[in-house]
Length: 213
Ligand SMILES: Nc1ncnc2c1ncn2[C@@H]1O[C@H](COP(=O)(O)OP(=O)(O)OP(=O)(O)O)[C@@H](O)[C@H]1O
Ligand SMILES: [Mg+2]
Image 1 (cartoon, rainbow, N blue to C red):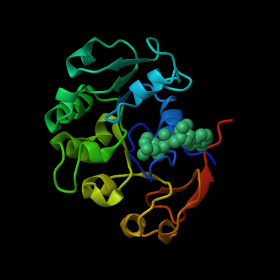
Image 2 (image 1 turned 90 degrees about the horizontal axis):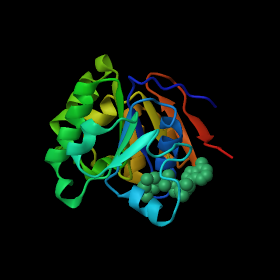
Image 3 (image 1 turned 45 degrees about the horizontal axis):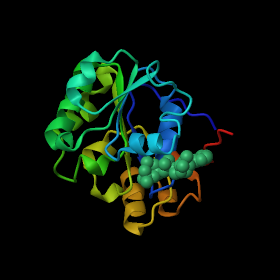
Image 4 (image 1 turned 120 degrees about the vertical axis):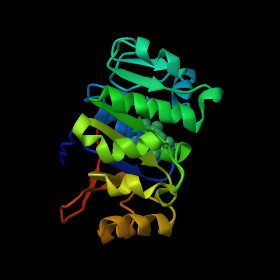
């Protein structure tokens, strides 16, 4: 299966922990030019500790830069950025400032590694809405990943073009995906390391896996 995703199209990736969401985003987005990963889980520190590559296939300092404070973002010279905020910056205000930066910069994809960390059903950074509803014209796109599609703002689902749906533990999460898209395949899990792929407006759902070996 080969999927082409435009840099002006929003992507939504739900799935339970360990299902492969971040892996998919990491592999696909390595091929994009300007990407900002919002790493609220501190995955970068975990990988450093385990001496694992921070972004598979890419080189730190050349392809991407890790920052922990938002004030450093304008100094970055690499096309990609990982923002793993320090504790004081793990607030809605900082997340909104980051999203605003992406919105104003244009031609940039923001990879939100866990949407639940920054947004609830009815409480979310205003610039998330700006990006979701007006990002297209600016070539600014959102890749939103989450373990719980039930708990995220409708604005995200309503403006998404590409869905990659991994295994979800809770039936109400699967139901939410089925109801939002009208595709009832989502009521079943796709299987270990597999995902359902659906493009908004199309009438079929594909079961696939990402094989990078
Ligand atoms: N298609 C794949 N091929 C090989 N390894 C994979 C694949 N998908 C995921 N993995 C591995 O499985 C582990 C869990 O995947 P990943 O970190 O992407 O999960 P996740 O859905 O982002 O989980 P969480 O919600 O906890 O962040 C990682 O070590 C990752 O490298
Ligand atoms: Mg992850």
